[in-house]
Image (tube, rainbow, N blue to C red; front, top):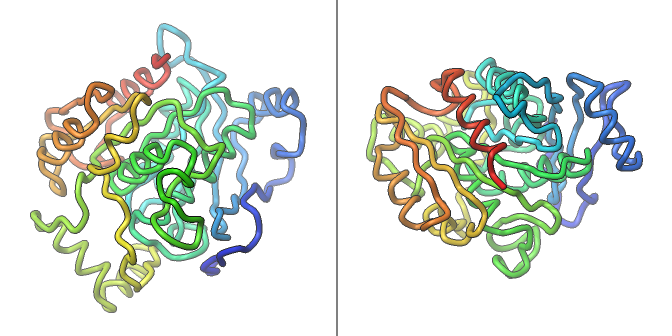
Length: 312
């Protein structure tokens, strides 16, 4: 899947690739019934800018909390840079979350089996938007997005658009800052190990990451060593940063989770996001927690999922 996608191309939607999987052309009642029968089903989603995104639905399995979970809610998981839906850490997240709700996992553009090239957090909002749309098409009444690291910045920016890019960005899919399209509203947002600002180079891991993203040799290492294909062009224009986006999320609930041993982004990042978001934000500073999905243990994942299903 190497196609970059074209502006003004095919309409975003769902392309089924697994026999026996749910069909988005069915009526809502049949969608809702089928999503509980199949444990998993894999699809290809088409973004607004024409990029094919691999995605998987994991059905609610129950047994996750005293409340018994929420079969009418989906948690859409946005992985970190170099992640993918087949990575062990992402599958572990899906496995834990499925005890509380239905789960959608997917690979961002340039990652795993998805098409296109990574823009490191810019046009990835369109990938998340396609996944949230799919969750709605499956009949889920409530959708919560949970993002890790780069995915954390994406879920914040996606929620800030509020499902209407026309008012917040002012321009369509090929120009201007990217955002969410109508119909992809989320009911709550969780940002784990997310950056507050772009171009941060204050830690050694982030300096290495910037070298990988900005240098031809780094992008080659990323492609063949990390299985992540990066777009060489710089952002133009620079998208709205997470800390600029955070005030626009209200009244949607926002949970910010960060570890005191995060080697990429120090604690001023989550605290800046919380200050910007205001009263609708809740912050968990986790003692001993490192960075993103690779460091998240089952207990933390269960608490995040329990928070998600408890939102009104």
